[in-house]
Length: 64
Image (cartoon, rainbow, N blue to C red):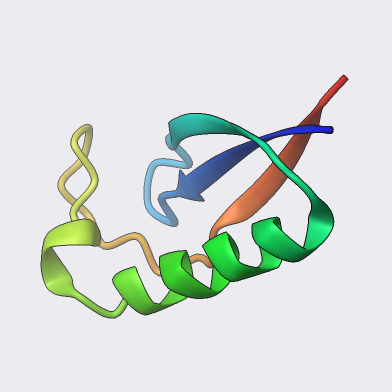
């Protein structure tokens, strides 16, 4: 299965996608855990479009 990880901005709804992952469910859970930890760091929270804070958890999108 292929997955793409997204961070979504709460202010302007802009999604910033990260790279695709072609891995198992267990590995993806690890990646999401790491991404959630990364979201606590301020430099990951600024949206490039409106410069608002991205306070939404990463979303995982399955690419078929």
